[in-house]
Length: 327
Image (cartoon, rainbow, N blue to C red; front, side, top):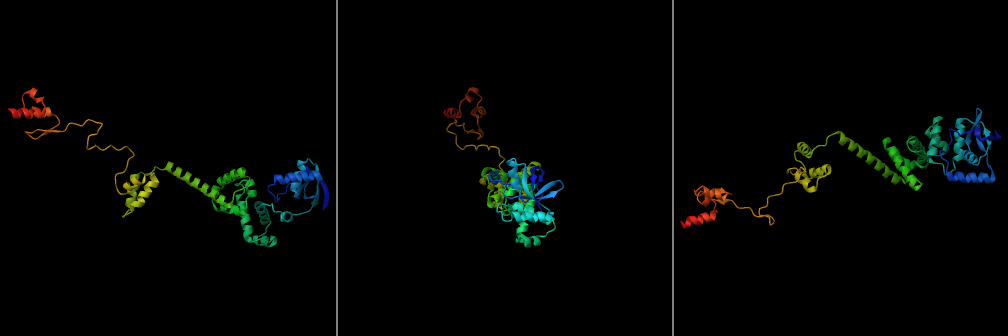
């Protein structure tokens, strides 16, 4: 173990670095503090070949780079991978701003070193359930944006992990939009609403795709198929089904369910009025011949059947009868 001034260009971040994100506000404060009072505590590194791997002190290195330092004071130690992981945990154990995702990354590293969940639970004083919930967050890596993961709690991640992976990208998009607008993540209940919305959109897209691929069943086919499958069809249910499936008004769907003729969608012909319209002249009634009893709309035709005089045939039926009675 030795204390040295090491050039910043020779430092590499540790693959076991516990922090995935550095708070920009905190980094600004640290930069101002180091610029004003210098480096208060050395960083810890281990030598790997001709370079140095940082065990902890990444924020101080970032602050030094921002202030254009050339070297930084470091404590050079010899450590194996497992020792580095434990040093990371000890350094950050009491830091409240270590995210659940960062703890999940650390747990993954320890599991890779051969530890079991039971052993880890005993060593760090946590329950196995705590370790399981945190480890599960690693499934979201690569799909959920790193910024979102670094702020997501394991409790908020639970409902996301319960749904299929095909929904995760859509959920991530909604979380990013919310984070950009509010500067923080929504509550767990709101995240459940986002998940439900993503599932509904996926369902609607699948239905639309199915409708495009398969021809839609006509109302007549649907009704015939329903009646064929049910010996005693429920007309109320059938009416409701027609309204939901084809968007029919309730009155029309009830008619169809009761076996009335289906509405084709074309305008119906207006019923013939029993009385003449006040806006149209009344049509001439059918004439009945008083001699033979035959009906005809043509008075002249009736009269001409019995009168040889063509001029006489041009007279109305009333005039003809009057003339006949006079004779």
